[in-house]
Image 1 (cartoon, rainbow, N blue to C red):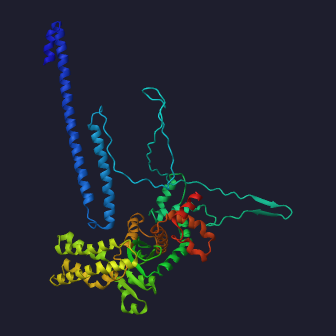
Image 2 (cartoon, rainbow, N blue to C red; image 1 turned 180 degrees about the vertical axis):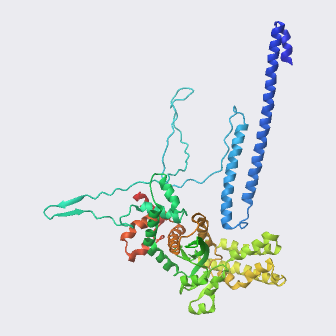
Image 3 (tube, helix red, strand yellow; image 1 turned 90 degrees about the horizontal axis):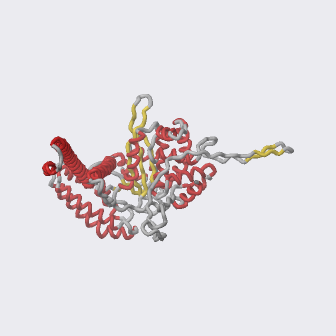
Length: 539
């Protein structure tokens, strides 16, 4: 090497030259080994980054390539949640690997982030002002002049914070009369109870809206050294449920005054005492029609089974259009004997009809199913056009555009079915629609009837997800109580009202509220701003 050859030019004795040559050789060998190790590490990091990028691309392809109905609604929600978590984790690992890969002497530019929605304006703001260390220029020493501000916002949260309301009631005595006077004890939902309205609201919302079992609330309180026994929490829930029942009953009365209803049901495991097992009960859901005037209402009805008799008992003498799926239990409502007593007219759900063809196309790429999906898609495109229209304008739109599409669809289905063998998936998909054709086309004859049952299915879905947490209902009474609370909180959500703010406001008023003014407490009686303002003032 050149370095070693230059040793001969130095004025060194032979022993010194040999010693220096050995030292230089050792240093060169060590440098070569470190360079080789660096290359190996560099190659390994390159491979790791490539693997992470490939995995990230694969997950994104899966995430954004999922068809709307490839999974059930519950499975799809859980899948997307897990997939999004994995994608975020992989992006972080890629960034970390790239940071380690890049030279420490090179400043890496910040990765551009996608734009985000502004944070809600109603949230309180805590300002943190960050001034430079000096107000003089670091180069010339002259005073700096403010020309603007760079403002960024971060969203923060404060977990449930327990505190104590201390009520002091001075007592005054009249010595001549020998009497004692003190302010009366304020009325409360639970007389003599230690739970304030805010705590009761937290328990009810956590249990019925966030689907947290009471033992988890017990653990949350224990972290703040607050002892809330499950038996105490259960007593609060029971008593609060009784106090709120009249409000839920009034919602049922108002719902049954509507002319069109959605109906659906979901199974709920109920504890079977003595057997150590659970039995199947059902939570029935009845929802108002969004295309009609009036506030939105969702009512849940807990029953011990799925028999159509339960729906008949709930509806009583109700008359109108009922939109349901093809479950046989509803057929009793549309029977001839039922029609004589109280007309209940069936509406078919195009979302269910579409799902039959979707499943068929997914299973074997059926061209017939694809044609059916295309034709049904035209019906939904027309509904999207009429979404913002009034009832009369929507009826005209359906008459001009939906009716021709339906007529052509019926003719095509009839002809195609005639040439299709019985018993197969294609025949079953077409039979579902053809056998219910009168119920399927009724919506298009009006401007106020809905095309499908999706509104009630979307409302009932959070409960179907939430029951994975609380596992089962402890008793039929507990199920009925849950149905009443879900009715109130669900209706508040449908009308854009903060359920927690509404519940707190209602629990404060209920102890002294007259039954004659119960409508004023309903979760749509006041604008959401009023409820939130009242809640903020109380806080």
